[in-house]
Length: 112
Length: 112
Image (cartoon, rainbow over all chains, first blue to last red):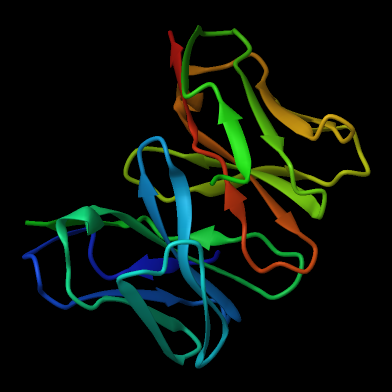
């Protein structure tokens, strides 16, 4: 069974801090994704990576960056956290081709 | 701007009722339409998916209806049970896309 693990379930940080969210998948998937989930807005794509060291901006990349140094790990970085980045963050992975995305259980991030 | 519009935002049915969730899209390049189910505290999980070459697909008590000319698709939950209470997301993707476009989500509550 596919396992996508996000390092923290809950995280509280302060405005201006640099924040790292980590995601690891155990199925050798090529593609990995970071979303944020907000009520009434669904899931919005922040960044995705189609292979190691490759990344592309999603729909809302402003204020975020990502890192994919190893195939199994995809990190989301908030360069200088702001209160409007308080949200649920979801990581997903999938095999290239006509395959579904598998999601982690999310990190609820609060920026104070 | 959301590429997939989903309605209603929430709905409540009695056990045995048939909740119906509707989604509409504009991008005619979309050719894969999955539905995801999300329980509280968990990430979304793929429930069922359809392609435009069929008008209906059933998996257990879940049915997708697809109307290509109207660019609409819907999820029906037959004989709904309290355990079906969850948030449901429709999504869409083009054949050459890595990323999914999600609807805003529908919270379904099935009362016993």
